[in-house]
Image (cartoon, rainbow, N blue to C red; front, side, top):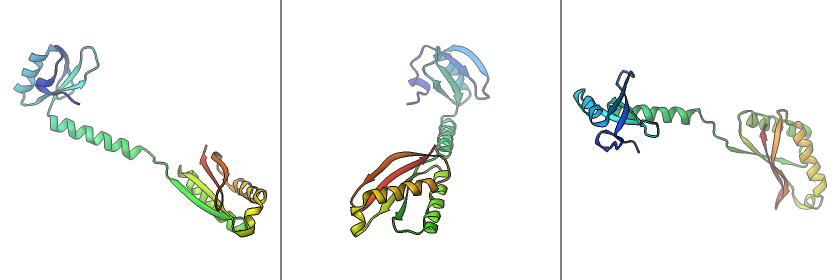
Length: 165
């Protein structure tokens, strides 16, 4: 929580004026009076510093600047989404290449990609064949990737997750 005006408990403060110039170390009462004379607030910027740092400025302006900083930080962060691609053991070579191209796009965008190899009917009895198909598909993926979740057999086939290195 940000302390302002009378809520500041430190005895001495390093004071910065509204222009950003360092005024120096003052008693809290003197700094508060200086802020009031200018029609502004005294805001504790860095409470952990020795002595704590306070700035003379409008609290509304300070709050606006802080919100702007947070928005900019959030906009700069990349979110990793889980993208999914389904392939079949019976799929033709070109179909697999199209799916591999899509996986490459997802990886280049920084997403985690879940690859599902679906199996039907009697295919479920031949797990090694399906596992080999999945590993062959992984060789088609061009960017360097790291396997997050090893191929795991489930109800409908194999699932695995990859991410760009």
